[in-house]
Image (cartoon, rainbow, N blue to C red):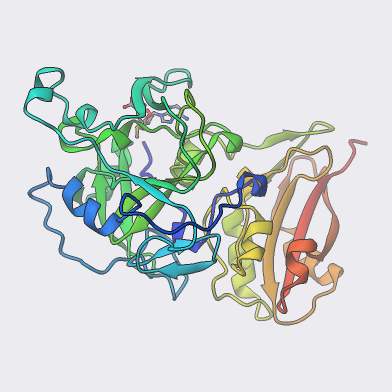
Length: 371
Ligand SMILES: C[S@@+](CC[C@H](N)C(=O)[O-])C[C@H]1O[C@@H](n2cnc3c(N)ncnc32)[C@H](O)[C@@H]1O
């Protein structure tokens, strides 16, 4: 089982928001004592890992985080588009800590992970066929509700983490893995180990947030009672789940786009700026990345299921490139079956990019009709 790789850097924005409509405006509200204080709660909630000494106070983010300014010692507010030392003082955010394990609760279950499940959540069989258990809400959660940290054994055995299916990778600001948090053992993990990966983009409702070298989850939208929680595990797992299989598009055209090829190609091209190019957040829409002034790719998982529009990549160039140049640059990297795919439109991005001074390019790939 692939290692969960939060291909997202939560701090970067909001990453995985494939759907901007999800975002609701929250009124300004002063932070109450009950609001999120991750730094404090995290220390308490990880106590049953006595062997896990927190060596690093300063954090970084998870995985392939190329953003130099990325620093997981702070929290990113996607409404303000900036970092704060703790939760955002301007937008409503809240935090649900793990349930404390009491001696009396041990008679109901000997699985420590299960006992940490807070009020408002239950563990029961997932809606995903053969996925085992999942976590469901029993009460409404507002957007920007945090929980965590994800508890597990810390190690750096990549292979065993890959096989685990319950492991998150924690990385420094350069994307280098620091350690793995592996929740495979139900006695050395918490309830968050039961949260499954969505089978479709639309199902994702929480996102991982690396903060102070721990992994937290944050709701991406309001979640209603009875919904199952889903967090995107990362591209590797998506590949495992077959997200990246060639997709049937309208007109029976099959297209397979390899984002790594595209990235490699862009890297080779001197005209293209590479700083902050990659976000590795497969669920983040290009539009949203542009809004946050974060250059990003969108991957095959971002396919928009509209009749014509099939995939979108966004990147930045120092020089204005004409469509033909861009076409030539990218052409080889659109793998097709029977050469049925063509790039029909290439242009400078739409509304979300027009307010930016940099040159953002949006590549849109459309299927062509079968002849
Ligand atoms: C972090 S655990 C999630 C909890 C797990 N369902 C359980 O009952 O312990 C990850 C494992 O759940 C299963 N899983 C998660 N998402 C899945 C999905 N979309 N499809 C199939 N299995 C999934 C896989 O077995 C995976 O290794």
